[in-house]
Length: 411
Image 1: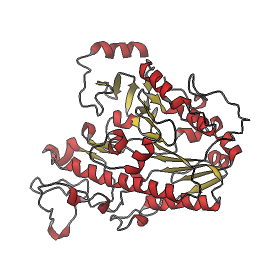
Image 2: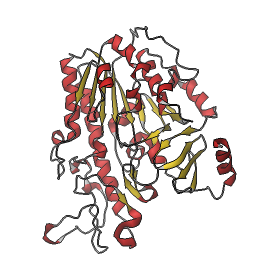
Image 3: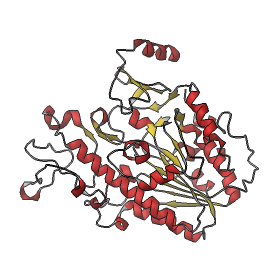
Image 4: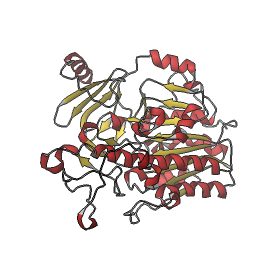
């Protein structure tokens, strides 16, 4: 079962040493953490995306560590990562190294604000744009990255930890559409025309005679049940693809801003961590949106990429509750937890099942070989992992022995 917040592991089993809070971590490099709500692995190149390009994240992954099956243990509404609610596990050593900065567009509780030397609360309550930006510097994510650059300048580069948490992918898609060049897409589609220049909202039915645009013109983040569109008359076959391109455009903007941010920092030895704190549905299970529909693998399997570590992919399921130990280890340059020896050990280990607590299901469990969900209506679903990445083939009916063994473990 998932450990409660107060019992988060202080170290990775058998790997990270149990350093005391008095260690000074004199050899630690400054760490920039970018935690992102609604970041789907399916849109990131180093996670195998064939339809979107993320060269900056891919480059970071090429020289660092990628957790291939980083599993979310708390499926919840947008908010700060659980790790930021348990700062005593890992933050104090970083404070001894230098100043610490938290920048967030999500409200920060007072106890978390007090733990960091500097807290910048970004305004996320202002009016959302109705049209995509013409230039990248007009976007919300660009303004957030500018806040990081400003804090770096105010500190004169003398900081040990800077953390930016953003929910922009779940709030507004204002990226310039030129980032996803439509003229490179081989399409046989007629231009979409609406009477009186009327643009349909995401909730309006779409006439089957009309052609879906190659990329959506709206900034509104969709939340769609594709099974209920147009009174059950069926979904236009290009709808999912168009929303994927629109989401991919926003991820491309994020990737570009990560590259610009990295080049703009005063320090040249900054290590970067990119971590998703929730997923995003792009048509899987018949839904499009953040926390849309029943919970599935795209909600639980999240990206985490760490630069300048022994380059390796960690193949086995790893719960996100290990993040405090990883943060602590990075400060002490203890990187044996992600080296080749650890990779070999992970590949052969029989990892215990990871439970995900969710208000959208009665039980969610990820193991080395299976992903199991018992929905709120008591229906049971089983998917073979890691082969069935997007949960295409529900084998619960074919493997009642596995379902029964999982139920017996929970009894």
